[in-house]
Amino acid sequence: MAIGPVQLIVLGFSHPDFHGEIINELERLRQSGTVRVIDAIVVYKDKEGRLEVEHLSNLTTEEAIEFGSTVGALIGLGIEGEEGAQIGAVLGAERAAEGARAFPEGAEAWDVLADIPVECAAALILLEHHWAVPLRDAVMRAGGFRIADSFISPLDLVDVGLHTAEEARQLHDLETAPRR
Image (tube, rainbow, N blue to C red; front, side, top):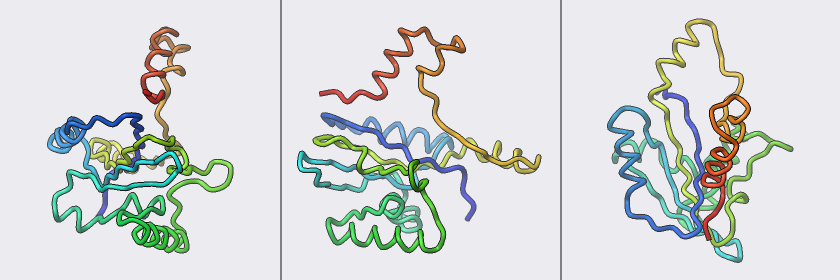
């Protein structure tokens, strides 16, 4: 099955206070055809660096069976405690042996789990961008291909006049600073 562009988003929470609002927004985006959540997990890292993992998703039963624990396989983390972590690591290693590379290696490697601060939770959400499928297909029909992609920090938008320095700093701090 061909799918649209996929993105892994990692969102941190110093003091998680979930009321279903995030799941509701993801469901609204799914219903509008904007995105589909392929997989989602919540990871809590305690002060010793130990991880607790919980599966979180708005997938239908059929989608959950089809995709399984995709995030865990991508980052080598399983859902069912130590045994699940081993299974996730094996799946990740098998995919790597087949030549799959979820993230760059070497200096540009992304260790998703290491980036989670201690005593914080993180939601790891693997999204398929349905809105981008027609654009991607049009680019491909025109002989184009993706060279790179990235979210742009508000700080980078000051020089082009989309934000004042003060607005950009406030947005950057809101987006990146853990709240204690």
